[in-house]
Image 1 (tube, rainbow, N blue to C red):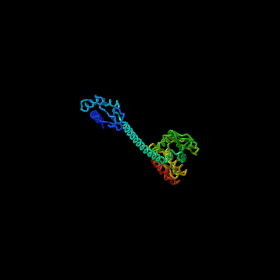
Image 2 (image 1 turned 90 degrees about the vertical axis):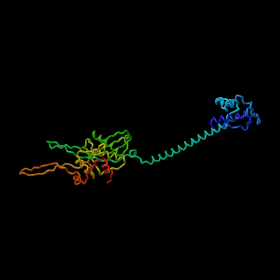
Image 3 (image 1 turned 120 degrees about the vertical axis):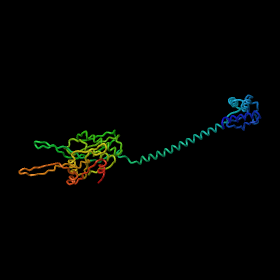
Image 4 (image 1 turned 30 degrees about the vertical axis):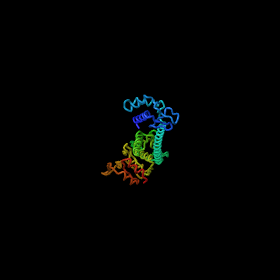
Length: 359
């Protein structure tokens, strides 16, 4: 019931009281949408509300308002007078009804919040279970990676015949290990002998490429490569020819894969993962064969070497020899002499197929 209808009904009640002298008993109060009209005296069951208990100006105001001869403000002032005089007052039943409604609304909201909480709790438990079932990343595993990889290098040997000095190169084997620790993204090369700038750069590129291959973020790790050798004639380590081998080692450590010890390689590593050229491929191949490798990987285009092809001719007392360089397959030389295969590779992906295979 809106306010206008409420006021009209109240006016009809008052007009009826004023006009007819209706009897209203205090034990059976008349309810008008939350208001109760009671007698002025309320001293006995037989008490009546006489027309004299309501001032005449209220009677006139109610009559005029009902006839549309006065405004709402005057009529409401008359109603307020009756309330103030305890002739017309609000019923406590209305307040109780409002409280019950508020409690019902609050209870509904609490039930809704409880339902949402239960749903979130179920989703949290499911997510926690998924996390617990995820396999642990090899990088976060506290177990240290114990695999190593062998790389080949060359070192110079100065020869003299008393008059002239010539420099030849011999190949040798390097053993490389890697340690991944919690840190700040440092890349370190730990060697017992001096190392050059190119070697350090190769280590950094190896970390970058390993990250690209595995997708594992190493920015909060320190990567330490350790290089050792049994060759006492090797006094320094430089050049980038061990870059490919370091990349293989680090990638295998991150993925927790074993390294085939029968495979050796030589080749630099480029930021895009390609294997770059090196020098002294023949000497390195001979060192790998002497080490006992079954497969030797070399950069693309370096599977051939130059050999001097000489011919002799005799003219009278003189013997003439003529030599010219000729390209010879390195694979044919190594396989015929040592039984070792030489395979050209163009990318780190090609290399990993051999090192991470058991055959």
